[in-house]
Each structure stands twice: as structure tokens, then as C-alpha cells.
Image 1 (cartoon, rainbow, N blue to C red):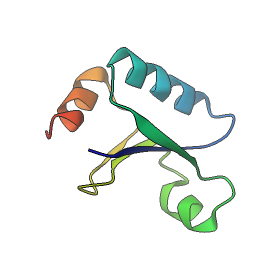
Image 2 (tube, one colour):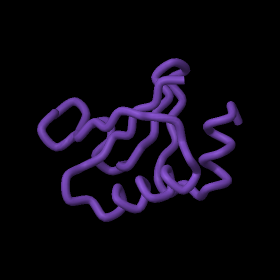
Image 3 (cartoon, rainbow, N blue to C red):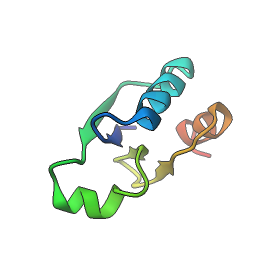
Length: 76
């Protein structure tokens, strides 16, 4: 599982998502900031933060509670 967290600069929801990921002891993930990328902005602008499994293409939109995050990480 290769995870990416799509987020924005100065995003309180993104900060909260990072705290949930840390509390859940999520595996390592890459962070991608969408602010300066028109394609990513169009795709994720209203949805950030979004956690994406790059292998399967599955995405978990915010808000995600710890239980939903665990289900996502373990293949639902």
C-alpha cells in the first residue's frame, strides 16, 4: 500500500487529518500540496484532505474517523 495525503497549505482540516493518521499509527505516506497544481486543484480542491491508496486507486475523503481510517487501511 502506497499512501498519499492530498492537502493544502494553511489547512486546519489537513492538520486534523494528520493528527488522526498519527493516532491511528497509519503507515508512512507522501504528502502532496495541491495549491499550485491546476489539475490537482480541480480534482481535490473541495475534498481535501484526501488519503489515496496509489496501488488500488481507492480514496478516503475527509472527514475520516479513526474507525473509517482503519477500515480503509485494512482493505475495507
